[in-house]
Image (cartoon, rainbow over all chains, first blue to last red; front, side, top):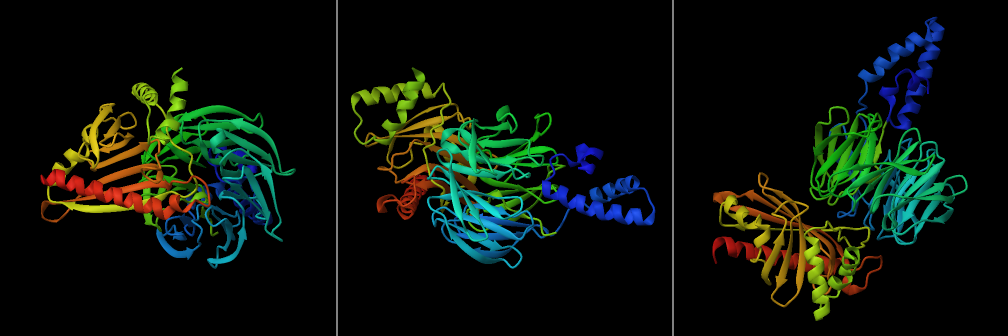
Length: 352
Length: 200
């Protein structure tokens, strides 16, 4: 948090994991500086500039669910190439990579199961049956619990990985996207056909509130400071910005046609528009529209690199993953994926 | 009042097999309103969109094929279509058309994309009739590309869901049935386009 106070503009919107990592590295720096007799504050300044210059981590991977291919395409994001294809079955759609990058969780709504993948060895660790239509998925910050939205069962399922115990809490109709706040306290579920979000208290695993948003919310995300949630509302062509403390919509952002998912990077809000073949970009502070980026055909999943420098978009119709620079908003590259990439969730693995 | 009419619209379009005079009236009124009001007619659907890609080679230059494909308001060359009622001046997300079928049925479609430079047209079918087509939320993307000898490759690509919106579909409304029906439909559309452009 020290860094945040030094350069709020720099760190705003950066993934909490990155913050953790930066802090970790920073404390090592402080220790070294102290031993060398230099002022920690001075070192922090030097360190910050190093972090900025050395920003792009090049070993990230994308875990892209290719629903048509019934498989998982693993894309090397340095090469922008699919380097492995894992058969999953059951029409895989949702994905969540654990914060430490050790595991990826894949939902198969037709097969009614969750696949746990050892991300480093790219092997299937286990398959956990989930009744109904498991779709949206997110992992707890410590990676010990996985939350799965059952599209048909009006419920959010919690799976404790060690032991596999399951319990569920009632949510709204056609539960779709799931997001866990980085502080681990709150879970947000998009209740698509109720035009609302369910706010779940993670500690008691109970539904604390329902928050009306735009029409047919699908993808949801929560910012690094666990203050705001965002939902992409497919049928009202907008994004609802929700203040989690007051549990109210504080702004509505007009997007392109059929917005599907939201991601946050570099203090900006990115929205994938399915019919618009585009990504809308807004300033996260002023909420002013900044730009509309043309991407591939029928963009769906949207996620951010571990360092927050890039945004990745899965294009369902054209079977591609596109990389966009979160600062310059320029398209950096494209990778071919398996058929029908959904990549619905936090699908980037930071290999650091 | 308007809202009531619009809300009533979906059930009627879904059971279009035998449209009574009253229903026709309401349908007509609702369609009239649709010209002025943006309506979102996306039906409930499940978690697995399906994709069908069909292509053909038309013996004509891309410009000539695009002239036919892009004329959203006059698509009476589509098989089974008797006439077309259109509004919205071919403006994406506004232009709508009603394909009046020879058998009395009606298909309503929204223009979602019209890119003359890339020769790409997007169409979304509004309202579903699984008795006519055992699929829902049908969206098509038609792309023209130059082929050898001045010919044109036409790609007709669709995104849709099976006819049954939930898991464990009955056999007549499963994925395979939806894919087979959409494949057959798109092949027929491409054959009709080819015949129209080549003047056969």
